[in-house]
Image (tube, rainbow, N blue to C red; front, top):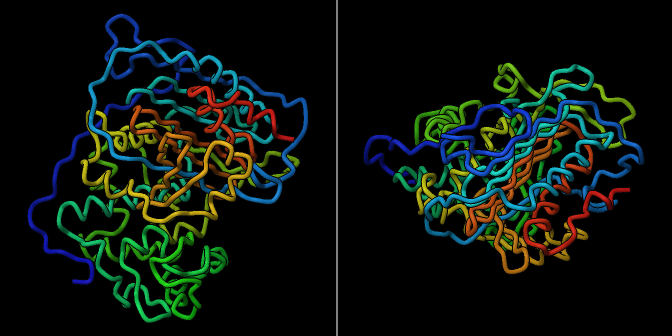
Length: 444
């Protein structure tokens, strides 16, 4: 039935997760009587001004002068739920806090919000800088940012939940009324959503950026020559990916925004997450974008973007607290996403050699990358990571998880600059001992 299945029962009530309060002065948790959910956490708020003494950021790429790491990545083998263990804060957090201060101190960094999870529990919360440069309005764990392409992880999980509940079948072909591609065969939904449509990379993103509607841009894809047959190669998409919204609407009777709220935000306690500009600016604290990789002045820009017209691909908005809840839902050490959902989204469907090549110096750590269902899979030595990143001019977002150990690194920022992009390999080096964690020192 074109990817749809009959509704077989009422909507399931899914388990939730506890959220954290806003950041305070640096301290270890828990104080006497503190709940286990904050065990071993350090909470740091940096509110003072930062002065960068050397250099600027001359290139767009976080890791090379010519490439671009506009979306980071990773996913993992599914692991069984494990009991939470009462642990001391990991020893590497002190060194990491110094590196976070270093990243916040770069002259291109405006606001930064970071959290680290170990053993499924929050170990570090770090916030620094301002929602708008010179405003005095400090970034907190409740400040809203754009997630950009990290939105795809929410869409992938939403689709897997709908499939788990019997509403859709991702192994059926995409009907031509939703997306009609050139060639003898249509992709299946799982091929389309795991970036194996056969279209050239980022097909017709330029139309979206030029103000053409998503409906028209998707229709024009029928005229584009494929670079491979569906299912045979990896090519990253936004416009084609947004066809998921039509499947979701037909399966649930809800808009994409309504469905992601009902099936994802609400059950997993992403209490400030939203979709698009209106949700971004509706909060008491929201981060303004600071655009330009070689900008000379930090002038806050407008929060609007044409990518709000492809919400499943790029329009989710989140706070750091939302990102913590999202990572914990995906880690699912005690609560969180159902096992079959995690298995579906973390499966490495497509080898993404182009992404591997684009990692530049990081290939010393990562030699294989894949795309799952809205998540990426990285092989860091003998560790499997689940991740994705997002970039829209003036905003960046990052999640990297290792489900086997209950680890996650999440970060949000509101400026263009290379320093925040280098934080996740810094964290991995420091926690594993696989390197010196000097990625920030290499920025020229």
